[in-house]
Length: 171
Image (cartoon, rainbow, N blue to C red; front, side, top):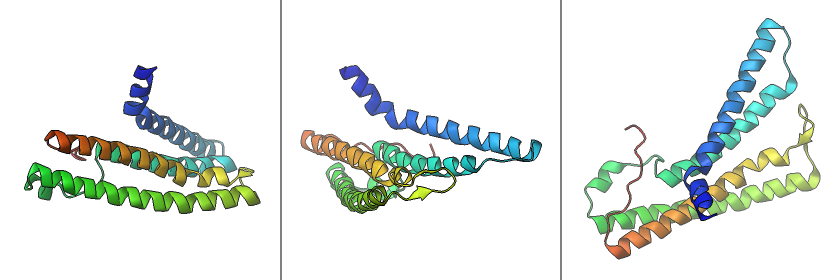
């Protein structure tokens, strides 16, 4: 069980992103063929691809936080001593956690309001709340990953190790 959880921790977002991306590409391909070959398109194809893309973006944000691959200026960090660098990274993580908590709170209010009043997506005839849930879901994952990063950075700082730099975007 512990190995399974470790595997999910290491690869969870990656597999979710892959599944969502494959779905988007498949649906858009089918819709293009239907529109230009059969002269007919569905209402649901564009809608589901759009909302799936929103989930993809927020899950991708959590994956970027996990890998420390989000946009930042690495050049400045290379000139700092390891302890100061760890402090800067912890400050950045704390600010990210604060932002994620604020966004999570307000997006949950929007989700709960939509769930309460039952607003419906016209083309799909399903409640809009599940599409709005992408934001709190994504920021819950971001909070999880920022928390893991803070715990790891504090442990590295206490042990005197250099902080984990993360992956670079274009290596």
